[in-house]
Length: 134
Ligand code: SF4
Image (tube, rainbow, N blue to C red; front, side, top):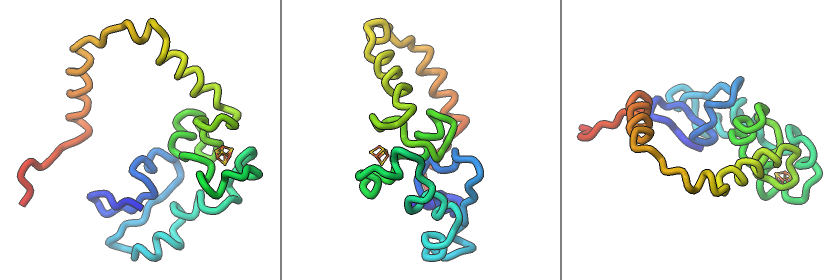
């Protein structure tokens, strides 16, 4: 459980990427209510939502089918088996990314300094920090 600066209660820091989930605000509901009854915390609780192979996997009570945000971002479906799992139908996406990341072409390419400047500029638009909060 995570509470963002606006009071929104999230199951993880990235959960807002999942379309259709609505998050309660701690100013309007108790944490007990949010944890036990809110739709965002109910959506992927238990095993009913799980597809195969998770639903019949003996690891499902340990890893809960993996990361929902990762599943969404890699497959387009937040309810898919996390592609990081070797049993996932979409595991080939992760394998292909690993091959590319470990290829000699990727390793030998220096990262241009300009890309760091661009990243910094983009980040400035997304984040702001109070340097001296009162
Ligand atoms: S993510 Fe993989 S290991 Fe975890 S429950 Fe699903 S199939 Fe099993």
